[in-house]
Image (cartoon, rainbow, N blue to C red; front, side, top):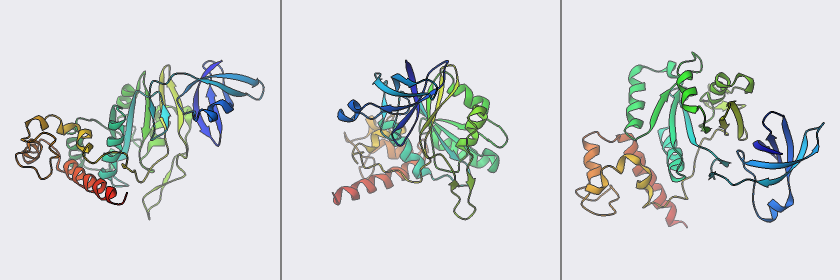
Length: 293
């Protein structure tokens, strides 16, 4: 019987079989021996051990279209990174770290700012300008007022999308609008620390309709980029690529070199200063980390 892993907790994998139900399965020892870990999103063959109790074993993991390391999910078409436009204030350095990670894993990413009702149009324009200059599609939503939900649904249709973002930005509330039957526990915001509470603790896959799947992942407050080489970092800022062929030096890092076309584009406001400043900060971080390894 073939199905898809929709959740994995403490060695148990919950496999949805289309037209039937969800089976609680264990992975056979052969996977451990081969050091293969089942991922949420895997298409698998299962052996049903108890139809009444809906229990079984995973016999085979089908070939993966792709496999993301962070978050650990497979067979995704795109990522949707959700930050709040306010409450909590968006940490754009953290957002850029996530975009780097998805870019490195060659996953197309949409940037979504939720809670658009909490900010002015000027603030929305600033966020839009920052990331459209970065070659990203930007979407604004309000789970509270149900704004932007139809457009979000259109962007997700017939694709498997991994959702990610910090705790407390309204991911669960948006999913509840898209898939009411998911009935996810929505996090409260602590007024003291402005972080989400009682939020997602594991990756989980939901079927919105037909071949449209949403993977929710645990909220994060930090993100390491240590697996990126400092000299490759510039390659993961898409807005740099239009200009670097015009730099005087091949392999220009766009930091201290003279006649740098990227820095010229920055001066002409064709590239976001926030994004460029984050590039510099991340480059310095990677450079410092290398000293202690």
